[in-house]
Length: 346
Image (cartoon, rainbow, N blue to C red; front, side, top):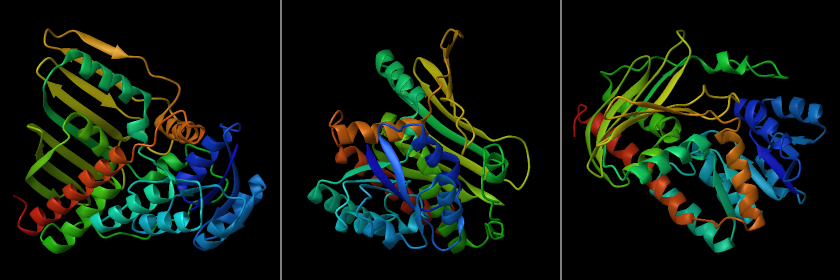
């Protein structure tokens, strides 16, 4: 069993990681929980009988903590990974992304490889059992990928937070002004953040089937908060579209892959809930439809199981893949921001 210290006490912690770790008692035990002074860590920790603090440094200094889980805003991820390595921790679980710039990424990979620290990124869609079946199907079909799209229509996260057992009253996020597409500099900055904080859920899937980024076709911000991005990768057309609304229907999170033989639709469950694997439908060139069964496990559970397997030595630590996924996202985010600043086209 490995002792875990969690830095960050937001919805990803209380709705996902704490229940998930509680379901893996043979592998993990949470011993320390820290926030950045908001008070949620104390309330969550008292409920579960673990230590709490209001400073990440306390978790890193805790000799009982072997695995550090970083569940903070993206801008702090690289710094906290490096701090965990310096503190001599054996493993790090970090929410995506592990870095927001190439320089940060280089530092993280060099530090972890040099110290032999196991690093797992919380890309839950990549770990979703359904995605493994999709990759197997695509490889078996030996079909050429023509296009990939990831379409997101997200209602407020609070809707899904309420669907799980939140022991602490939710904190209301500050009001964010809607995107103003006329302000190119601000739109570019917002969309770059959205690529690295939202689109990054599906970019490892894109890279699995279209690994080489080629060029941006178009990019624009969508009000109130969203993006519409088109680019080419490995000869395929890729489109990423997302819109976050203050109200509306239930969330849609769909990845669609069109090949020379068929079309594959992957519908992921809403965020922040354990609802089993994605639903997959394949329509072949003759109109026949194949549906993959939804599995009870999900990517949130499988990413922690993968970390346990790495710590046991049952899986190899593949820093090359981890680095390639992160670099693909950073290159895309930079290219998208440049395109928006230039008026939306490459």
